[in-house]
Amino acid sequence: MSEIAPEAPTSPVLPVTLEGRFVRLEPITEDHSAGLAALHADAGAKIFRNSPFPGSFDDYIDAALAALKPDAHLPFVVREQGTDAYIGMSRLFDISPADRGLEIGFTWYHPNFWGGPTNPECKLLLMTHAFEICGFERVQLKTDGRNLHSQAAMTKMGATREGTLRHHRVRSDGLWRDSVYFSVLSEEWPAVKAGLEARLQR
Image (cartoon, rainbow, N blue to C red):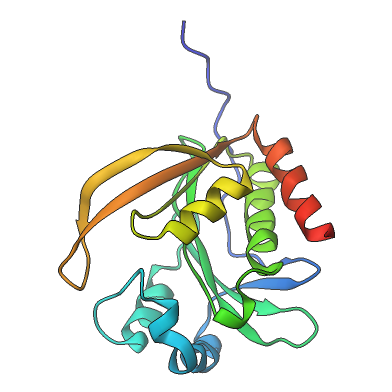
């Protein structure tokens, strides 16, 4: 017998600023464009080597601004608490209130912030918002099959690896992308949250 799903959340998923000890996630605006462009100019080749995008970086930012829509697609700009330095971006997208599911993705950070508290705290803030504020059941993540670093990070976080969609998309460089999927369910969230908090304490 299938489990009966609880009623879907009734409140919309709106743009909101999420604040932690180390980072702050701000809904994207035009005012962020210059700071993000500076990150790309400094280290874009390294940041996007596993996830190339078509067109210019200005096109990428314009598309993020155009995609912003409650209950559908929420791009965030990641900044450092205390200094306001620009770090990168992440998003809540493919938001489906009826199915109580969404995806975290389009995530990238300047290399100066790799390996520290940035990614664990971003995931903690985004998933706390999704599960505890918005009442969602499932948070999905995916990455390119070539991106072993990202897959390791999702596994370390405690997400469950679900499988791979082979030749899922054609990348902007003409290569096939195999997409590796992970997820966290609401019943798994307390353990995942505890692990993320423990990493931040260290």
